[in-house]
Amino acid sequence: MSGDLNTIRLSATDRGVRVAVTFLRKGGLVAFPTETVYGLGADARDERAVAGIYRAKGRPSHNPVIVHVASLEAAARLIDLPPEGVRLAKAFWPGPLTLVAPVRAESGIADICRAGALTLAVRVPAAPLALSLLQAFDGPVAAPSANLSGKISPTSADHVMEEMHGRLEGVLDGGVCGVGLESTIVGFDEAGKPRILRPGGVTREQLEQVVGPVSAGPVTDDIAPSAPGQLSSHYAPGARLRLNAERPELGEAWLGFGEEPERSSAIAINLSAAASVEEAASNLFGHLRHLDALLEHSGTIAVAAIPERGIGCAINDRLRRAAAPR
Ligand code: TXA
Ligand code: MG
Image (cartoon, rainbow, N blue to C red; front, side):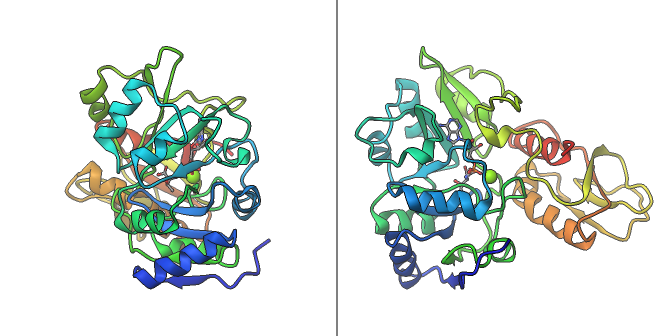
């Protein structure tokens, strides 16, 4: 099923932002770039508008969404952050960090955003166009990644157009996302100690510099996922993935990292010839989409080993989910 709206591409200008705000005020859906990935935005106070996000993505109703605001002050009106949450927010906002904390009674956020949870996920993105949109809208914007549920997240307006055309009113085109992987999601236990629910753009090392030891990565639990992006199959191309490969087998496509092996494969692309995990992160989703299209969404992509350091941990998390049995 594809939608029947005439999705328009909006320029990264004051005028583009104004049109996007008009759509949001009417209860419509607008995709916009953050520094991580493109989000599919709706007015977070409008139950019907947010229901439209779930419909457009084919997202299961038990998977809550992240609410985006322009400042820590705006976030503090929505959730009760424990002291360590405030320290993390001051250190990393605006930026690729999402904080999950108890929702405040007077938040005004539509219940559907929480999908039944008593907590709400909130983020202040750093991309200038995202901040301009949030400031001009002057309200909270609910936005999951702007892809069909379970598929690869979009890191350009073209990705959104190709996959979601007809399902939303407009896409603010801010070019390619710099970080390229979703935000790090941090929740808190009863004692207010932080826990990483999803690795992402802010590394564990960076978090620990601010608040000391942070408990180990996300739990994979398909029955009660605490951040359902953790469903084991996610970010999935049509092609299968073979991870930690030394070289491609005959007929496989090759997604390399660092130095290239000797290979005969005709279809190959490198995440970072310079072996930079940051560069690899920003290329990951675009390169996966590209290879998947060349393979016509079948066959196998062999993927080189990515070092488990810094944002490499988040890359490996996404690759494992993309490779998981479906
Ligand atoms: O970088 C990002 O985080 C992007 C941009 C658009 O902000 N957004 C994003 O949204 O990745 P989405 O929906 O694809 O992933 C949000 C994740 C999901 O795994 C969801 O389950 C989790 O956040 N989440 C949302 N609310 C939650 C809550 N109250 N408790 C635990 N997890 C929550
Ligand atoms: Mg997503």
